[in-house]
Length: 24
Figure 1 (cartoon, rainbow, N blue to C red):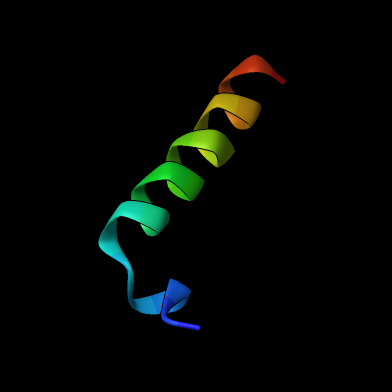
Figure 2 (figure 1 turned 135 degrees about the horizontal axis):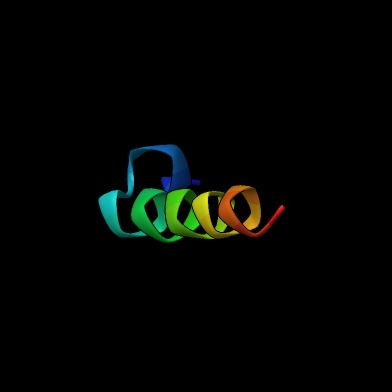
């Protein structure tokens, strides 16, 4: 599992979290 070190995965997850927060 190289997820934690995958820049792309991190970017996607961060973007999703940001969207959730801005919509809340």
